[in-house]
Length: 143
Image (spheres, rainbow, N blue to C red):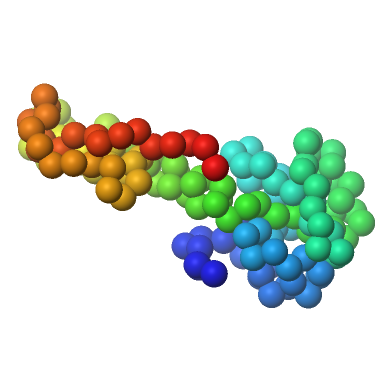
């Protein structure tokens, strides 16, 4: 199981989730407060002690499940994708702060663009922008 750079909720561990009774390694655990925040950008699930889950549809379900002592989860792949989006948004924000005459601005834009593609999706060559890289194909958003 590959480690995640940043957990959605540091107040609960994967081991605690397993002790609770939910064992699937593709889910990252959360408590009520983190679930409410993560729900703004990812699908979250009510986790149950019998190793099952249910999709959370609204904030009311978070309150109800938490009141019963329930915990929540976000799929690891969804969380990692969200972390990548957050990183790209920070890079774009920082890029916008750079002076227009910064000679590295084009290279930074290329890195941001390349970050949206999977490994192997860029091919060397001459592109219209003159940066030497062109996209080989677009990233598939399907699971």
